[in-house]
Length: 489
Image 1: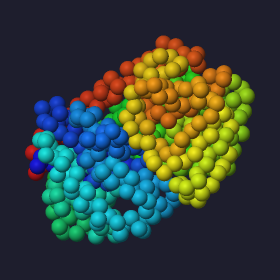
Image 2 (image 1 turned 180 degrees about the vertical axis):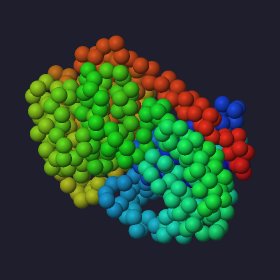
Image 3 (image 1 turned 120 degrees about the vertical axis):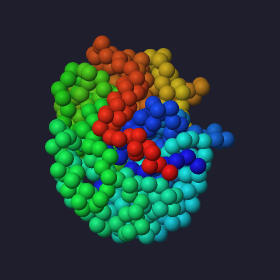
Image 4 (image 1 turned 90 degrees about the vertical axis):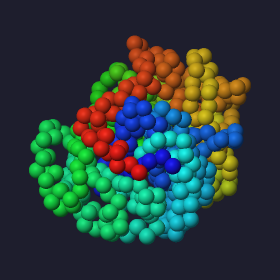
């Protein structure tokens, strides 16, 4: 087995994902064969990893896909053996080693977790068999001691796999001394013994101003401080894992093209919009419920959804259907991605009750297509080309349902002779199941030209690589990375 170190947080959204990605890149730059691992993830931002010996793919968290890029390795289903995809306020779809295991309400899942530990440890052994170092990311916080007896994501995993833990505190949200000292206080003795130290994340300004804070934490815990990490500006170029960040994206910076994205209740794979956000002339604004779609938007994109019918009903409740109809009458452009594509049609049928009750609801009627939900999920990587522009597109599909109708005779992409997507007769409305459509630089450039935006065309993948290198350099400057890696076992 490879040696390993684990980052756990004092809470959610403390920056563990970016820190793991940066440390993975720092380890790679040292010549180490390194891989990421997250025992359990909860996110509707999923990616596709190939399954050896099978034609289809399996789902993992998008964060582990990004961390695999940081490591310079192909993503594996074993990097995230348990993925929870929330479908309602109380329940989620459970994906185990890439494949749908079933549905579970929160209380039922707590009882299920011990059974999933076998899958977690199986993936752990397989992942560590051919590398030097594994950097593990926890989920939530080890301080949730009410969940400790059945934990598979934090100390439950760390103690079973004997992986030393570095605790991450977020100073930007305030109370970081109390959060670290409080975690030390309430952890059971065996769990506390797994912690080899801590680091402070998201510090703004002169890090030496926190010297007294480090002394205070040392007094309360005796834990070693590995460093204080400043606010990582380069992280803005990388995909975000959780929808919690969307609130910070509700206000954009005025640019030549405004792109409005309704913030669906079960929004999924919203990193599809990241390449557009990176374009210097494009402003992407996520519109929260209760707010109108901006009338000055030149493009509205309806993103993916984990629960198409539920989000479609809420779309109407918010009045976004009227805003979208007004946008269409003004000559605006509209794109639907995956679940958003399904919403743009005439009707969405769920005869098997896959998303809940067996139901049929009218769509937004902007594409002449119908969608029927099917039991079998399509999960695969796709190499295609844009039918309109003749440019290459590489992406992936993760969806339930089959969409058909007259507008499908004007497909958006073609892969191996198979068409996907639909477009209106005037070309101003289209939808596709292909995630990653805007990642393709030439395709994105041509598409923006149809909206009057010229002179763009950034190399998005190169921007991601530069951001990973920049984060690694910052971590090497502000953390004792050699000492941290040396503690791996």
